Length: 261
Image (cartoon, rainbow, N blue to C red; front, side, top):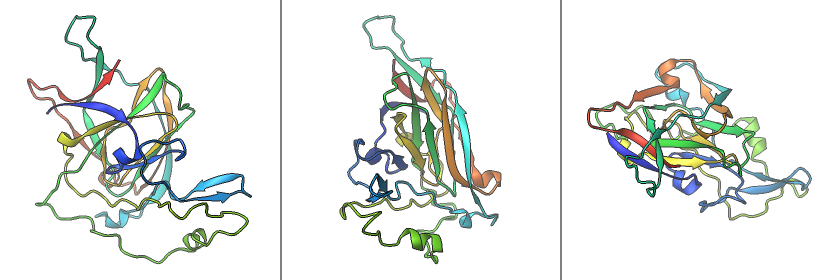
């Protein structure tokens, strides 16, 4: 391929096809729907309901191995960028590029990245969220259902959904709506022609929807970022993670994210 991606701010509306942006809705931009909110902790806190879904779809996996919830930490160092300026004209705006060489997906689980210790106003460090839609695979067997089958609710869910009391967890508004869980994307390869690149700051966590093609984490700037990562896993390699290599042919620049210097 010979594709250059411009970077855009990470907002929920722009990212909705690929997953969820987890952030304080009060200060968030680009969010047409607000999550449900209730008062909590004796009125000293606001609780936003279901800001992101972590749903186990491993019952669809061929092996039948059950999954468990896992929480890992990734310490991600800043990536080295390549110069994207072919001119020596000092008046020309200088840009850099990040070559995307691998995309991966987790077919049966969402994956949430939560940055630690990075301030929203820190202009020296940020991270890229690079994603691509899934191509339709009409000649391959459909591994995923078109709808989520109903299941009996657990006691935990029943109590969690209980009506809020008049003292605590009182509903502030009935106009909000929480996002529905995303279904797995299916068995197709990534559609590189519709790939997107988003720039995130320290006030934002991100959930990749199940089966969403994405690049391994790309940190930009001066320092590493510690991420807590939450997902499901059944320890079967190809059911936990699948990768594709993006090869650069002769005369092609490949897939690159263009970044203003």
